[in-house]
Image (cartoon, rainbow, N blue to C red; front, side, top):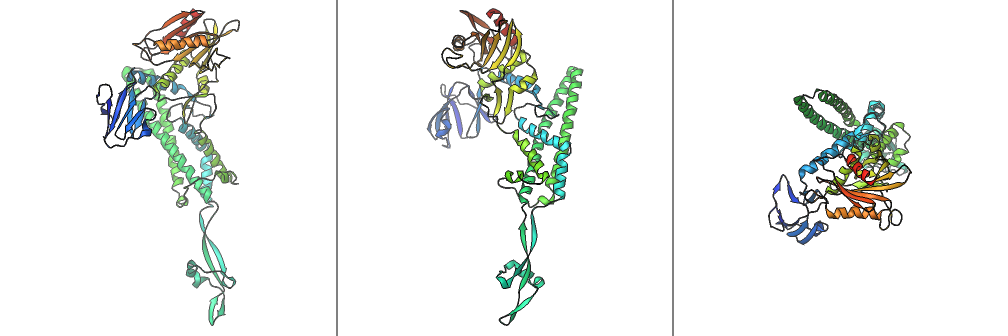
Length: 501
């Protein structure tokens, strides 16, 4: 290990354990590289590069883990690992309930960080195989191969200028048909020879091989994923048996049988796809380079068009969403992870139906996205019809008296006279001895008095207490949202609404 990291304040060396350095947030460190391989561009956004051997950097709460020279440096929050492990566990529990059914398939999928994209594509593949379409298409193509290379017969007329090649001479003794006298010698006038010719269908067969390997890889990932789920579920069942929770054991047992059935089905499809991949007709087919999708779309054979359409549908799940109203959440950021957690808690505590959450929270290859244009009805509370918005924008001189603002969450309050007012909430994962920080309360004053129609603003923070201040005709306060000491946010917010009313 040529890298060494020291706390700049006390010069204490940071230990390298479990293949990572663990540092504290909001501290300054120096890094020494005995090999002299530090690069200036590596420290543009995190610190100061002094020389190839020496640099300083500051840990912030913007990232949980970053890499330097292929080495993990983990920023440990002051709130502790237990807090964030609990946050992640609660988020994962909610996400398991967000079943994706919008693709129209019977096999509904859990929305998970790592495998959502592959799950959608795999479900399309499995559906096509189970209804028999994919299997029949592949069988037709392999039983009627019209591709690759073949020997094409050619007749060369030497009296008309055709030229013999070195390959042609091996056919001289058996393929010459007529002779003429030339300079006292008999020479053939024609020769029947053979040329090695490539058919136009090579492009299509490259695609078929590419498609099969693509599907094989998807199934392999899905089988591994199901295997991990099965192992985890078996542990859970064993724990519930020890606790004597028989009803829970029966429920988990049914889920286990379903997962095993899915895994067996996937393995069977993978095995049969492998038979096609190993078919000798694909031995000499190579698909290096670009696949010509335009030619395939114009192809007149239904079977190839079916494969192409299925592949394009599967690939569509990998495409990023590009609408301007989507907010991306970086789940490697400590701040954004807590912001996401608070939003999930609001949805959960206000009993928002899962069907609505499915349309609100999406996943693409760039990460989690929340559609901030979709309002969420959260019921009648303290005489107000309440609607929750994520990152609602209040523009300068329109929704705001001064600058443009977009609080993390805004609850629109509509009274019996249909008059609208707003209660704003902001997630701040910081605290001072478990009390809300003054800067965060100041920010709530800004929202309350700068955004038109506001009746109050509340900080959601991981402390242990709640507080409020009456300010003219509005309210500014703080409400703790801590997974280690959970509080029902609906009841907490209703308390504030009763005061506002």
